[in-house]
Amino acid sequence: MESFGRWRALPLKQDSVPALFVCHEFAASRYGVILTDLTNVWEENLDINEICDRAERDGCTINPRDDRQQLEIFFRKIADTLEGLETTTMTLGTNDKDNRLILKISARLPAPLPDFTWQIELDKKDRRALTCDLLCPLILNLHQRQHMIEQLHRQLRDKDHVIARLLDKMESSTTDLREVFPGTSGVRFRKGTSQRTQLAKHVNGLAPFDTAALHTELDTTPATESLLDLAEMAHGRQLQDLWRTLGEHPQHWWSTIGTPSYPSNPLGELVSQQISAQDDDTTDETEDGGEFQVGLL
Image (cartoon, rainbow, N blue to C red; front, side, top):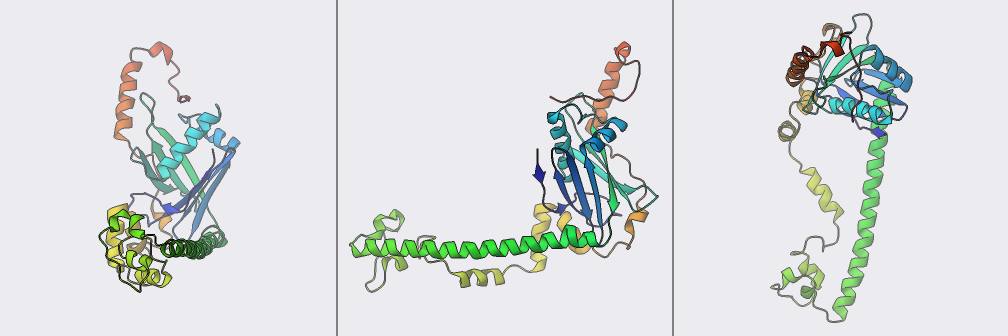
């Protein structure tokens, strides 16, 4: 499985943490997670051996060493958490030794399996990482989008030219364009004006593309307050945090958040209680009482 995610707001609900943004990349032999507060960058990159060693060390309930399918499920659970799916939770902290951030995540698994838990250990990068990992990709993306818009405008102008030639040919052969667009059968044509021009008021897309009109429409977009209201409705608090909490946290805010712990999952706790009740009747099968790894179908 390969998936490269775009930058997105990290759906983290901790008052002591500013708005954070995350980007992740998963491949067949490695994964990478980048986190930023738009001033600093933290990153973790693990190859397949490091992933499997940590999974074994921490008793992960999904064993990525089993086969490719298990590795894909493993990656999907991490991605689901970073994207804020309802069945996932996360908490952020530090290890109290350096500037490393510890992101502990939890995702629900099918009953009766216990929750999937994982610890992402992000090392603080130097200031050049902000340019390499965030600013340069954003500038490149902006350039690509501008180029794409210019290409789109050219293609629209070419299509307008073709459409105009076809309609002119139809009009010159005494074709009534109202027969082509049945919804305009009640329109009365005036002499001296092309049928296309008159029908353009009633048929969306029939008029030539107007670049100037598009820019005028974009110049009259809602005020910032209205956009924030829309952002609140569409994305909850995350986009608001970008505007309203930047600068409110201390420069080294990560030094105040303490050591993280896995967030509780009520459904996961209920499943664990059910498993414990079943274990009372099957103690002969679980005498070692240790952590275990399982494969998911």
